[in-house]
Length: 386
Image (cartoon, rainbow, N blue to C red; front, top):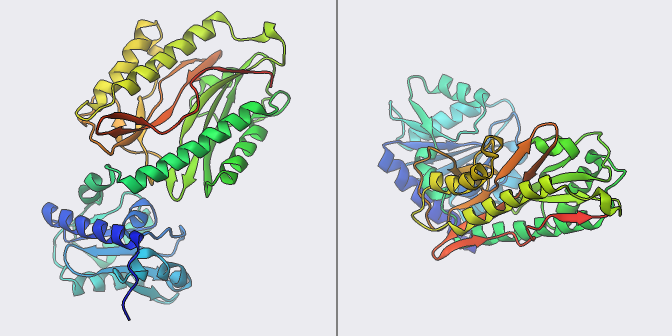
């Protein structure tokens, strides 16, 4: 019986073939991908992270094998690569040695000897050490040697999923800004953010930073028991995954409790203006051929000229896709040059410890004709009654 050919299967088949070509060009004989972004990218399989081994064995030539625990076999059989017959599915039982099974598959594919194997960066140490046990003397490298050039450039389907995720996060920002904030803890608002992200189509909410008052000066603040009060700035940095692809947006709120005298100070507004100008200038500078380090400098120079260079304490941005943080990274010293299809955050910030912080973040794609900003939520400071 002929296997069904779906759009997903066509995409996965192309990715597998291009990865095999990349393996051959690097001199590696196989790629081993465990649970995570590489596995999903290459097979469409979003596997559970267990102590049991799930592993894609992709030789540089020949058939791929997806090794899974028996209790995960039905789920694995439904992934695009398995449905289309692009991988041999091998289920192992509780008393089997799955690592020896992997070694056997490599030998059958002619990937034995001393030639190098590539493993995905997220493969747990317990699996890598067990593989080293059954493959003595083998050299291991990172799968990024083969997958980096593929995954860093998003295709039209990936960009559409990133756009859908961004627009869903936009809606959640608006919903939170329109709701009650004063008298609630940061943790309570964070829980609401997570619920709303899922309600807007995300399968998971990965983070929901709600940093109020002086906590806004902590870039990765863990929302806690602090109660939001009139006169508080709030950093709202939220994101999750929609069909596997990430959202990540940061907007600034100020709650007044309906009292105009509790509005933002001139100093805060000046800092906010610096960050907004840095965000918008860096975004406007996005185009193919621009260096990631140069883009970081565009934003940093504006903040430096405003007297707060030392308070911009992180890189301008990070790539995004199946991983929340992936290449390219917009940071000083990077030799990376933007290409059409690169997707990344632009998120300048100023953090005045013990007082307040400001950050504005969008997801941007480098398109053929310049920046494609996926988020549509306004950059304005949202001054709300709360």
